[in-house]
Amino acid sequence: MSIEYDLVIIGASQEGIFAALAAASFKARVALVEQPFKDCSDGLDAIFNRTLSHVTHLSKQLEIARQLGVYQPISHLEIQLSQSQVWEQEAKAILAEQNSLATLAALGIDVIRGSGEFCRLPRQAFIIENRKLRSRSYLLATGSHLVPKTIEGIERVGYLTPSDLCRKEVLESLARELAIIGSSPFAIQLAQNLRQTGRNIVLLIEDKQLLSTEDLEVAQLIQAHLEASGIEILVDSQVTQIQQIEKKKWLQAGNRAIETDEIILVGKQQPNIEGLNLEGVGVKISDRGIELNHKLQTTNPNIYACGYLLNHLARYEARIAVKNALFFPLFKVDPQTIPDVMFTNPPIARVGLTEAEAITKYGKDVWVIKQNFKGIAIAQLLGETTGFCKIIVRSNGEIMGAHIIGSQAEELIGTITWAIKNRIKLNAFTDNFLPFTFSEILLSCAFEWQNRRLKRNTRLKRLLDFLLSWLRSFLNKFIKFISNETIIYCFGGNGWFWYVNTSHPFKRLFYRTRRTSNC
Image (tube, rainbow, N blue to C red):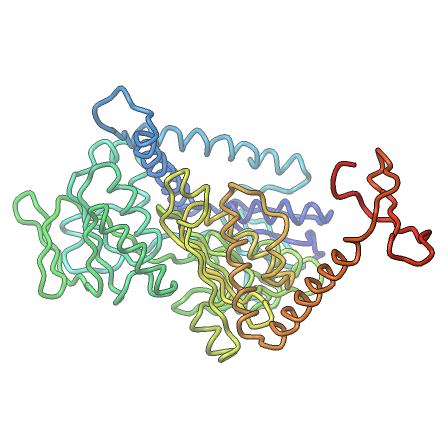
């Protein structure tokens, strides 16, 4: 049986739709199988959480407005989560309409509704409703879902998940006392957003520190910020048992018992791969999910996968996978040029190596440049001075990585990512930055690096001292030389004038120079 398609994409997730559009732009023949999953959030939880983050940011802006003399006619700030949900759903509907399945079909993409599975080798194909889809390559873009952790008594007592919060009836009846179990950035964002609505939050984290994979200074600052807002953070807290006593829920974490009204359990992300018969086509699956190489190939070289673990990487991975699947598998995922963003308040962004990783790799050839937002004019004017920018560079100015916590971090990290990818050194940031913008933090980092470089490079420092000293000496001699000269004629518009050296024996030697004052 002949091959029908260049690429068959399994899963109409956000990354699946993006991959279909990317493949169609190469004039490939593409099929997109909808492949719905019952537990697939498809990024909806993240979109809703981003909406809540925006609400949190707006509430902070209202507080700053009072200090600027802008007063509200209400006595206190009230946030209605159900109204925020309506806004989020309207925005989501508009975005979905732009990339609807009907729109994809109009672009020549063969959209196939329903679910299917791979048929076993050696005649590899994807079967859906007795139809065999044969292709040169296949792409798994089925999305992921959060898997709750197994805790004794959790099923009997009951709990909520982030997906439950997307339902209006749950939001309207959400309790005032909440315990959030989870160590992921998603759990931290959710805790901060719900705290802004006036709820009392206890955040239980299994790790020994908040955001254990982030820079230590960043983790310490965001933890201090969360605790200052009233969130109780319990690190190294393994919840072993949950019980219901009267109308309260009790959590046992070590030697502590925590009382709360409701529990929100934020699990770990797992790919939606049930029922695809991946084992039958030689795709290996481990505890971490599908085994992939840097080219996003599975253990079956004709089957690729993308976006099933981290939502913010989905489109980047989809682009790499599509190019490898359609042409030759030459393109690799470069983790050093992939930024990561947390929409907390203040937001957190990072890219490249951490300070510890850079020191391990380059040793003493690593410089850490750090500047605080409180030294930036626009940060002072807007009252958003919390945070800093830390850039890890080598002695020659090559950027190895960066960590930013503060306002507009999610935008600033894009500039640094572009610099890392194109091997642009830090001193290039000294040019073309607009004043009174948050990008001045990058300018400050570049100047700080130049100052440190000058202090450490004694040879360059002596050369600059000699050059500037010679220029001062030359100017002094020139001024002394023309002190006995008499101006004999002055041009008006072109800014030049002539003068004669009266001490010269011929009295007729003329010189031409710029006018320095009115004639």
